[in-house]
Each structure stands twice: as structure tokens, then as C-alpha cells.
Amino acid sequence: MIRVTDVDMALLRPLLYYQAADLPFHRPSDDPKLLYELRPNFAMTLQGRKISINSLGFRDKERSVKKPRGVFRIVCLGSSNTYGAAVNDDETYPAYLEAVLNKRAPGRYEVWNAGISAYVLAQSTAWAEEIARKYEPDLIIFQYYNVGRKPFLLGYPYSRYFDADPSLYLENLRYLPFSSRELDLALLRRWRLFRAGIILLNRWDAVASNNPFYNNQRLDFSEFENFYLTHERTTHLVDFSIDPDPIHADPFQSLGLKTVFLRDHVPPGAPPEYLKVHPPAYVYRRYAEILISALRKEGLLPR
Image 1 (cartoon, rainbow, N blue to C red):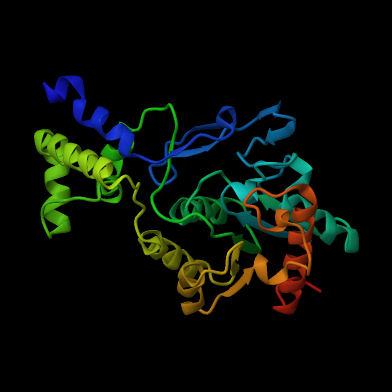
Image 2 (tube, rainbow, N blue to C red):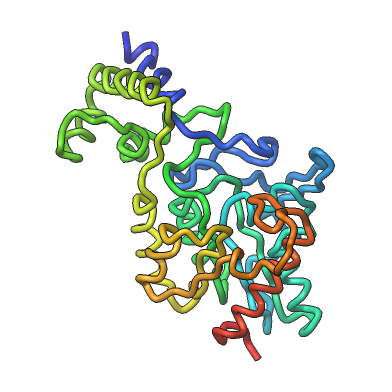
């Protein structure tokens, strides 16, 4: 009966974490590490914001796969703050960063906006792997803000991702009966009655605690660490974060990476918009100035 009705996966639905913002611009991904992505070649005005996704799947102007000669290509990865959830295409901080850099050196820079709403570090890292493989970036900037479980795209099927990556069970179920991760995973993969029972216990636990859980951020740090060890020549500046909580910074600093906290650069008497997760355009302009200063200080921009 469980096999026919998929009741176990239906029971799982309320325990998952979902991305629901700007849904028309997103689609499910074939990559189980990403879960969803931006919809290529799609543009519309939504709630007064002009949003355009180019043919390569970035919220950006049209770009060539092959890097033009003499161009320094920067790619900015992150979640909704990088994507620019409250602004137009040309008002995101990657767009401002490109505009300011090219004002000083016309045509010298490309700054790609690779932000995707609600992405956690594991998803951004998987996206960065594809970007590094295909698009020849000279510098990769990670904005690390969201922590915990990978979100799924609201309203779309999710079962196939658990088939492709069974570790998603371990990521999304807090209560597991055995101390052996391998045994729990083997039973969850192969025995649907066991899976349904464990999911029911986790639903009871979620109701009883009245507190949605998020796994420790180190859950998604190991994949970033592996990426960095492979691409350390291009991955130089990380954690362009809003809140300088040590839990965000410590793992990156242990690798010797430069971290920048926005809160450290808020001008005296600045309005609260400076610390919003989705700030207005003038704050993103300030982001660009902060980044340029940090990049120049670290010698990461060409002379």
C-alpha cells in the first residue's frame, strides 16, 4: 500500500523547508545538489521589480560562455541578498559592482550575478562547481548568509531528489533511531514502512517542540571546503555577510579566507535599511563600494 500510494513521501512534505519567493523565475533542477535553479530566458515585471534571467540561467544581462579577451570575470554567489530580492536587475550589488569597476576601466570587468533565492552554502557550492567548469571566472565571491537544510521549490515534486541523494533523509529528519548513520540511511532507503514510521515520529517531534529545526551550518561546509581546495586561486573572498556572528565566520577563517561583514562598514547614523536582508538599491551601491575597497586591499583586482 505504501509503495502504491507514496504515503511516506506525502507525510514528509510538511517537514521540508521551501523556497517560495519569485516562483515564476525558478524551476526544478536536474541536479540533486541544486534542487532548483533560475528559469533561463525568462523576464517579467513582478511587484514593480524588473527581473530578467539570461539564457545561461543567471539574473543578469546576456553573457558569453567564452570569456572575452582582456576581461576580468567576477562571479558573485549567494542567496536572495545577492539575487536582489527587492530591486530591479540593474540595482543588485553585482550590477553596481560591474558598473563602478567599468567606470574606472571601461569594458575591463564582468560581474555576474549568480545569486539564487534561499540557497544555502551547499547549493551555492554545487552551482560554483558548474560555473568554474564552464565559464572561466577569475574571481569567485561567496556571500554566506543562509545556514542549515537545503530548501526545495514550493509546489513542485521532491521525491526524485531523495532517490538520487538519500542523504537528504538525514538532513531533513532530526529524530533517527540508531546511532549509526549508515544503518539509518540504509533502512530509510530500502524499507518504506520503516521510512513512513520515522517520518511520523519526526512530525510528532516537530509539533511537540513547536520549533522547526535547522541542522548545524557545518553540515554544508565540507563541500565548500573541498571546492576551495580545488579552486583556491579564484576563491579569495567569502562571507560578505550582514551579521558578524562568529558561527558564520569561523569556518572560513580557519581556511585563511578573507571575510567582510557589512555591519562593520555601516556609516555612523545610517538608517536601518543598511542591515536589512533585502535592502533598497542605494544600500547595494554601498555594498559595491565596500567590496571594491576590500578587493583592492587584498590585491585581487588587476592593475
